[in-house]
Length: 102
Image (cartoon, rainbow, N blue to C red):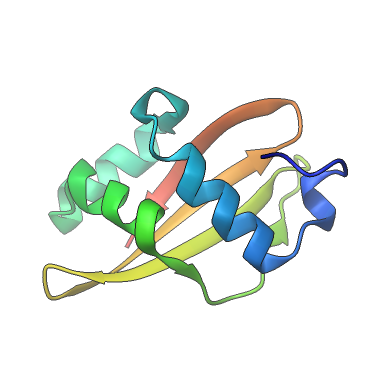
């Protein structure tokens, strides 16, 4: 499933396919403390986040953060809400790290 080159060079369709596939295994999804705090404040459940990762689309171009991770924002209309989930991806870690949810 993983293309031969660094995730920094993947196309948006490749990133979406990867995120959707990997999010089927909840053991590969890590929620940061920041994400959990923001989710609680915004009344966003882990179920809504999972739905967004499994069915959403990347609308904005992914960006590389100062640590070298690729930040992708998946968006999806679920339960009447437009949920946006920012995840971090890197070549060295196969997990999807949920940074925040809006």
